[in-house]
Image (tube, rainbow over all chains, first blue to last red; front, side, top):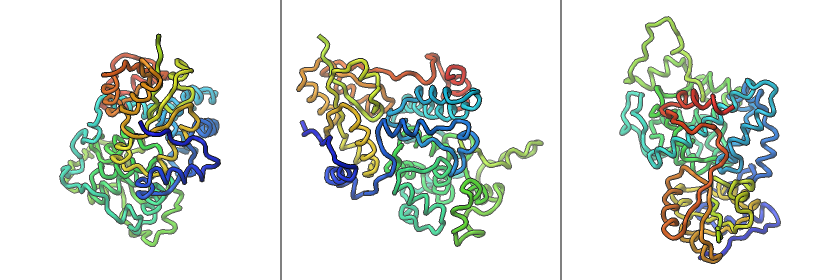
Length: 284
Length: 137
């Protein structure tokens, strides 16, 4: 039997000092602390701020009305059912809550899959649809990404933010994952492990299966993006400061980037009247 | 007579969890899984977040091998049952099997998000949602 760990602390600083002593290896790996507070009280505060209608129309933008509930849902501090009930109680018309409830559904979906797959969530669910086999992808994280020194202001900022705060907006996660897997040819598992070490809401099911969705091992096609997409949803905050603007890895149309990133991939049938192929894969 | 202890894990850090409602007077334990922290290479900020959640719960905090610590805790209180919340984690299943060799484990479920017990195809989210949306609202 081990000794009971402390429960009384005069301040958050005192708690942090205690944890640095108790978990020196974790502190050596990364000693940052997040401004996001744990606990039910903080969860309820976040819950009160949820605006389902605004969420629906702005959630893909970095400054959109996202809920920030994911760490509390991850640890069961809030249940999906109670968030659903509160969201429905906040709207006059149910349709205003549909998008947010649908997103809660993604967590329920990942958890159900986790119950089925177990440790299998670390395996490719399907082959890559990128024209490359799994063995083409590196198993280790590139140092310049971890250190945030790629020179791409967006990617470097996401890397720093992840490690310093334990939070990335969903769109930032997708861009980072796509960059790592499709531009740098790193296997999704390496990125998933990196995210799990840092994300406050790090959950093997949501995390790994979302990485697989980007990688195309759990979707019909790979998710990728271009500079225009990133600039739009970030309101240009990274591109405006980037010395590589106009010549970065993400320049060009989706068609151009698709050919560049996946030259050996099976071509999408473009003979029909629909031009939907020309649109980017929507963020989930 | 039923004399349980509560084992809290990382999927149920809610003071209003069904385990506390079902057994309001039962002693509760959380065990930091040192092997898991190492395996997942968890950073300090994740540990801090969880610790802050724990401080709002009536729970004794320990560390080490989870099954060993939970069983030792049960022995301290002469408990004849372990109560916990369900989790899809395979590690959770393994720990339940180990503990279950010594004491019965009761696993409670949270209020369901989708009020439907039938089969749902999980091949793609769209297939899941076609069924789920009928029961979720």
